[in-house]
Length: 353
Image (cartoon, rainbow, N blue to C red; front, side, top):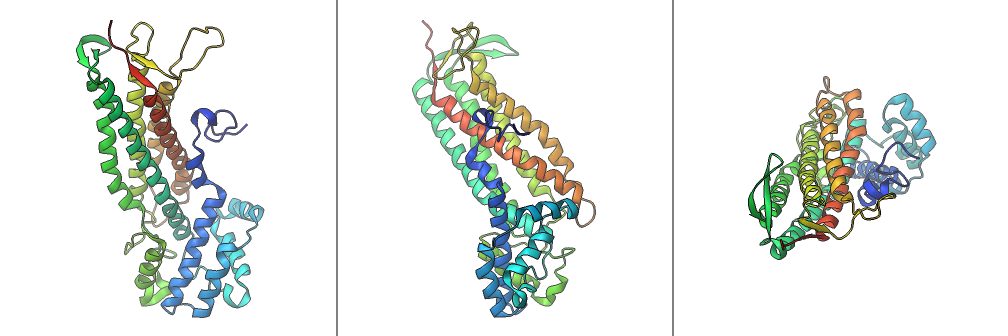
């Protein structure tokens, strides 16, 4: 038993997404942080901030450093973030001579936010690919069944006959717009965060920008001249986008559930859920899941907008709220896209007799 349905040993079969969940594993998070610290050392060595031999040694040792997870957990309870204990362990791993140069000029939020950005590159690529695949599946459904007549409904009442293509396009076109929106979302997220204690890089003197540019380039992220430690509009925009995606898929799920009603029977589902008491039923489980996930993300979105309120140069409360909410929203969107593709792939519009 777990507290989240996304990694529940049973419910994850309905709501989970193992591929995306991997990006939020302890290993993935720590690997991204170690990559930041190793790359930072190389960038600072190249700019003469730390000795070149120290930079080389740190970059070689950190990616394979053995970390003590129990100590990280205990220290996070005390410090509120993982990084102070992580840096302590990395300095020991780098050795007495070079360890002092680990994390030079950086702060905890640089490590954590850049680590998230590195993982979001892969996450958003997967979501984009799934959107593209779902759009293609809807196109195929439209090409095959788009000419079949269905009854249009307004305000839950029968209106006038419309072709199935009318319904399919109302599912497909928002997804195309979501893919277009994603480019702007990614531009605000796939950035390197590097500002030091209060975002001024005061410990690097006049080399702060040069180090930041080297760091970003080596990590494959965009450089921004000022860190966005307390400017969370990019993260909030991602949350909004995730809710838009699940909301559009929820609309499709609601439509399919209504079309599949026994009294309507305008679509047939290849795979449906059975009943323990009524063996004749074919429950529209996939469609129902889409509605559930849409409502789930819409609920969490308000929390992510609460997390926009970062006091002064850094907030412990708002930042922690992001950690609690964003992974669930990502997994909900991923599960919804996966479920929707399976649903559409097995959906057939039924011609009227």
